[in-house]
Length: 88
Image (tube, rainbow, N blue to C red; front, side):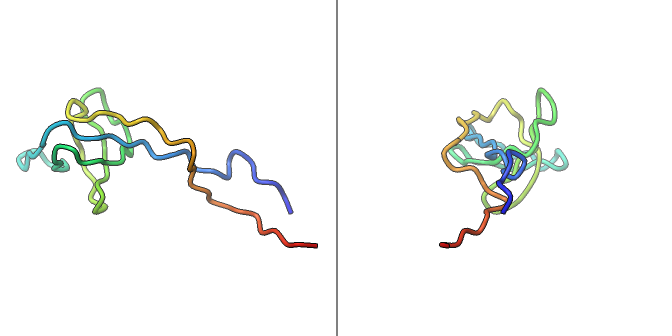
């Protein structure tokens, strides 16, 4: 059975916590967020806007000025492949 390599593990998802409410329906493709909400940063699109996903799975742009990046959790990487082991 081949050993898993570093390429067999996804890096932890980047998360950020909202420090203020943001709601701007007049700006297309934005994601409304509430103070204290934790979102997944799917892409740091620019110096002003980040593409994020909320807990409901909705995706949109959030101004990075309202987000505080959270430290990465290295203790629980998401595995794509886990080798099966058998007692011999």
